[in-house]
Amino acid sequence: MFLQLVGNGLVTGSVIAIAAVGVSLVYGILGLVNFAFGDVMAFGGFVAFLFNVTLGLPIAAATAIAMLMTALLCVVLEGVLWRPLRLRRAGFMSLFLASIGLALVLRQAIFLVAGPQTRAFDVDPYRVYVVASVRFSTGQTAALVVATATIVLVGLVLGLTSVGRTMRAVADSRTLAAVAGIDTERVVVLTWVLAGLLAALAGVLAGLVQSSFDPNFGFSLLLPTFAAVVLGGIGSAYGALAGGIALGLAMEVSTWSGFFGGVDSVYKPVVAFAVLIVALLLRPQGLLGKARLA
Amino acid sequence: MNAIASGEFWVFVGVIAGIYTLLGLGIQLEFGFAGLLNFGHVAFMAIGAYTMAILTVKAGLSMWLSAGLGVLAAAAAGIVLGLPTLRLRADYFAIVTIAFGEIVRYVATNEDGLTGGSQGTINLAGPGQASEYNGSWERFQTWLQHALHVGSSDVAMLLVVWAAALALTALLAASARTPWSRVLKSIREDEDVAASLGKNVFAYKLQALALGSAAAGLAGCFFAWQFSFFSPGDFAPLLTFFAWMIVILGGLGRPWSVPVGALMLGVIYAGTRFFDFPPFSYFDSAERAYLRLIVIGVVIIGLVLFRPQGVLGRREELVLE
Image (cartoon, rainbow over all chains, first blue to last red; front, top):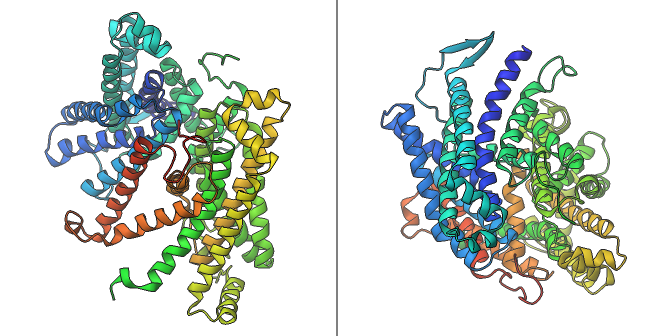
């Protein structure tokens, strides 16, 4: 039972981790706490649903198309919203509020087009994989495998490629990066592409793991994602990964009966927030975040 | 009869705008004065409403006493939230307040024994039992209707809500000229400067959060009386963003702009109900509900882009950053 919960925790955690890396990258490069990220995830999930169920494509192909279209959405939004705001020297507060407005628009637009019904991807719900007495559904297995591959891939992109190096440089200091000859606007667009790909992937995987979803599901994932980002230290991509896994484990393992009889499973999100608040009190800069100056 | 011409409908919009004014005043004090980013404001409204209803139904207290305790409970919750978190950086604090709002809603949804669960206060006294918390309120409304010779109890409600809203606005406006408010505003501008002048920044922020939460608690009581029944779903994060939008629509840092902003939001939100020209006429009423929220979202984005000091705000005092 305990192992099963650890397994579930890894699945939940790796989906949150993918989303959290997306949020964290955008925050690092643009200083934007993106409240619309959950609804961008839902957008990806629903585009994948359109191609997978309505048009009958295999889930992998539908996911790939959804990732590309979500990346495109993010780039378009950069052009019509975020870039104009930056040109007006908008600060943290303006950007955050604009993202709240955008979240409303996106979520209601999904409601308008897709309707309020719950949906499910076209995968075999009864197939079960057993690893060391831990049982995983098809969706959970896919989430675990894909998430692990994605996490390694993102780590490689950020750590080894020139794109990753320029991104980290801009995140450290935009001005210094520009002085060093980096085309910062290009880095911003690349960041949005990466964030869009990650958002759609996280949306699809979350939809697979939950087995059914409605247009609100992105928003319900947003707060655990924020918790993971803050837990890891805002702006640190690796921290966000660690934060996501830690939160997923904490949420699932807290329901273990050996843990003071187990927390009622409806309170899993509350566990995530409680972990977040306690962690912030003990370590305000986050698990892997840099200590605040002054 | 066409709803747009019906007086009853606009009285309803007016009552809601009055309740939103109370909610917005809390954000005006917390953000407009003290610079606090509280995105869990609706939680304090829920705490006020639930405390009032639970104490009236379960503990048998008088509704008026329960309402007073509800406002106090909201203020106390502000202190409990603020004590550990107000020392955090602004962006961390903002995220923690969102989390707090969701925790309150989860608890209200799942602790059936305490709150009636997801079905709301109808279950408050247990299954199959009438649970009414607003009997005293309805008697008061009827008494007021006759005392003032107004047409309906809804009009009486409108007058009470706005009396409370305007009184509280006047109080905030009067406090804006006190040294206390000047310290809050100096904290908003630069808390290190305020601290170096010997001001206890933490204590001032805590007071602002507690008082703003009390205003939300009062809004919660009026909300509960207006609808005579409520459930956790009524306290979704959307209401917090309505309160923010009111303050930005009206004008940052200016108390009297809050009722103006609340009326503007009420008219935008209710008015979009009557858009029956293309493209709106192509959608049915459920779809139009989504469209209305899209309009609200677009207005928020438009304000941030083109009018960052709010419609009635002063650029010299406070601009969204």
